[in-house]
Length: 368
Image (cartoon, rainbow, N blue to C red):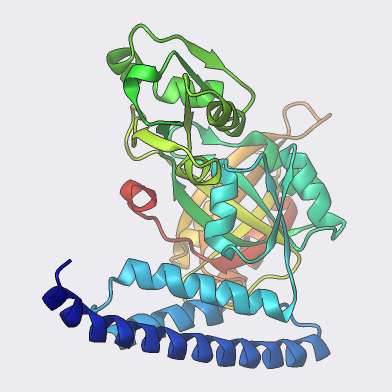
């Protein structure tokens, strides 16, 4: 850099430094306000997490921006600011289906931000157990995948544990090939979880036909192995590459584009209506002809959209089924409340699992 360029850059860099100092002061002031709000909430035993308010804040920020700053970047920045301020009100513990750097971990950090304490659990059942016993504040589990369908263990957990569904998030599932050096000529083995290898089989056979693949218990273990052996590459998440300081050999190597998993946020209290909500129900029908039709008819008459219905056999009761049902709207909405009451008469069992803001479906490339 010559002296002329330096003189041109110097005042701009000094201005940036000045702006950064002001930003830090404003962030400190914001944190102080959040802590005062937390004290007020604590007096009435309110949860620090307020999904509706947080969504309003993000929408306000985007409206102030007028698309001058990249909107997605602004969402990420303020998402982390909100996360830190929320955690200052009361530190949160989040249980999730582990291990670290898996897609459930990514979903948890995307939903809650980086500030909380994330605690991996060995199984979906363990996540439900920790939430029910209040050893964690919230849990994150997969409920369905756009390719592989519904996760049966999560349905079982919704049946067996006294918790509420208080949120959801959709996460595009995209696999990267990662290694220490990022060089293809040094790769002698490719490791990953069996499902990840299966989802990338065609790509791996085309680009690494002579390199053996090996199954391990998780994508996280594959990444850890690659971090200590430069001849090993792992098929894992982008989060694994960042966590274990690995280089990306190739992004998005999955054979099927558009693979997305929906995750549920488990807790004990549901958020207030946001205007774009979903309600989850668990029910059992009378064993007589037309019972399912009679269930759906009142919802259709009230214009309530049925977004998901999934049957699950009842344990120890052959040929009896529970139905997991998602409908559009919040249980506090008059039409939804009336619709649920109208179908209760035809059910031998009906439980409201929760109402919460609908998650946003994002483009698979957003997480890359």
